[in-house]
Image (tube, rainbow, N blue to C red; front, side, top):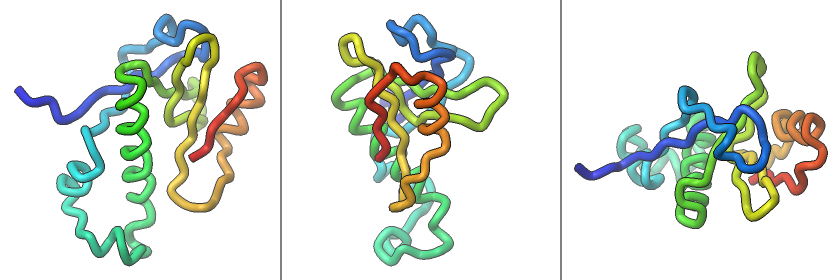
Length: 133
């Protein structure tokens, strides 16, 4: 069977090693590439190229999908996401490289206000750098 999606699990705490804080009951599913996501969503090329106003919300999903596939290429199955219990704060991706933890927040527009990333930096100030894409 051909696998056309992969799972990124949530971590409950950004500690080293991240794998020790994995929550197997909470996860996000991603496809292998943005083309599959566009095809499954019946998304025409015009929506991507003409920046249709009606397409605004789905841009985030496409952007997050693209970053997920790039991170997965380099990091394989070592990518997670973080969310605060009983809060809307969520970091799209978080990974460990050697002894450092890197949170990544993805934005589809030029608006770089990332409330979740700011919240995360405030809650875990020793975890630097933070990346917003």
